[in-house]
Length: 459
Ligand SMILES: Cc1ncc(COP(=O)(O)O)c(C=O)c1O
Image (cartoon, rainbow, N blue to C red; front, top):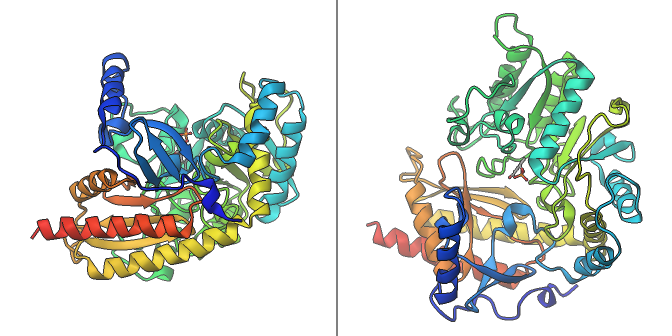
């Protein structure tokens, strides 16, 4: 398929230096009417008007290349016409149906079970809950507790699982937790094998996996670890908010083995990594791991329609009717959008496109890192790529301020990028997957030029 048609024809196109007058007007109104917790426009003064594919138009007519995809919500592109058509048809018919069956619901669930990774494939059950990723995490943990009759959990350093109390308790970043601790639920954190930056000072993948897995084993098995035997271990197959941390391939299988041995469930949080983002339907596929429960949200609704759910092995289906209820248990429009997005991706061989572009982007960015003093690490899978900036490649001291400047400079040039990482020093390249190669390379050239320009000014 020619993805060109799915994007605005001319991008980037800066008509007026952003933020333009209309953007300034709306940002002012927002700051005078909404609470101070509003965050994104304080980092980038961007005021969206419309989106198409991997391009975005602001209210002053500027057009941007989108390297952020609403943090992986828009994998199939803004206003993807195929998905939009199917969702609109559903919108005109019925939207809210509690959990009564609808055609849209059945079609989405059938597809998810067909795509499920590992032993869950063709052998799964799906439960929808509230519309956010945090809701899915809550559901997964509730099910794990109900199944095992144990109440504590293990998560990982660098993890992000959401903002509701349980999801926040599973999130390691202190900036989110510090004013709310103790959060109540008993959660302990194990080390995640971050090859670039870890407290073991280990850069051999096999040795690092061993150290992390031994640590986890000790937490669970040792009589004096201070850690109660958990209901489940929850893991992101690739950490997203943590800074696109790709663990060595055998890590997930190894923690699966520890879980199996100890009768602990394994939850794969695929909220950010699923739906073709990493070049597979689910990132768990890379390692062949068999999670017991998978959480899904973000791109599940096809074109940004809010919906979340969990998928789990059939034998975990022990909840009775009404055991996990809520008003929003899967919006029919989002379900139609989700099913249509899966068909679209299959029809256009989206995975092949993601793998081809991902390889091209990684190779471009690794060359860029070779020429840069401050780009310390480039890593990722598919179109889920992180660039870690440091003050000195030897000491690896994180450099958030460089990323701040880089993000602002790219925005002025019409490229929208977002950051992540515990130190805020990782640029995340997460475009809608329908981006064309031309648009992507164009955006990457801008990124490279701005890195060079900022580096020169740092001399
Ligand atoms: C891996 C992961 N889990 C859970 C969440 C929480 O999702 P939400 O923000 O929709 O509650 C996120 C959000 O970024 C995430 O990346």
